[in-house]
Image 1 (cartoon, rainbow, N blue to C red):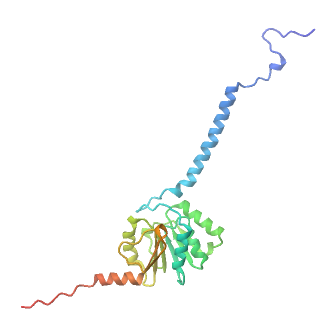
Image 2 (cartoon, rainbow, N blue to C red):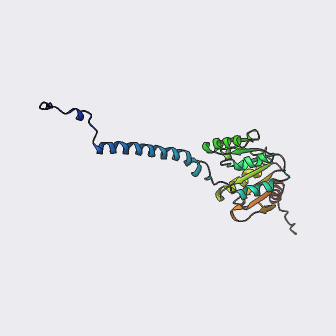
Image 3 (cartoon, rainbow, N blue to C red):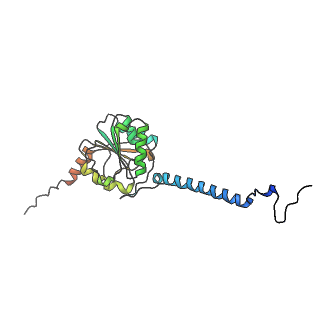
Length: 224
């Protein structure tokens, strides 16, 4: 005869109790939510510095240069010598492209994530020996030692940058402005169309024009 369980007892098969289905679903829901939330936070932390401007005197958002813009810049560096500096170098693509053409190239960028990413890209492309990237505010740097200056600017920064470069650059320097021209300088040449337009300014030209403007006007003799 089979034994009858004592009152209050449970059959053997009921000793291993399973959690309610609702509890199991809630647990998995919390795990999935945690994983998704953590992933989104990581993506936000990595990508935010690339799509939002760093704090600086003039807002200079990171907008990657197009392949056409890079080609136009390199075209204007053809037959030039000396060093190249990219003001607001972003992810370093102009600096790296110039280094591949044999220039000693330097980039200044205030966003630390972009600086480190640029250094990694230069190492990956095999030109880290010819490139340098600095996390510095462009308004606190002198560009007097460079013979080729590249700038991807925004309209509100071009006038103060024009005044800064006017006083700092040597007479043999070439300035290459991308996307927006300088307000007062007359370009020696330009190439490209639309957003890919590049304007070239040789310092001998704009320094000479500035000296002409500063010359005192000769007064006419007044007869008695």
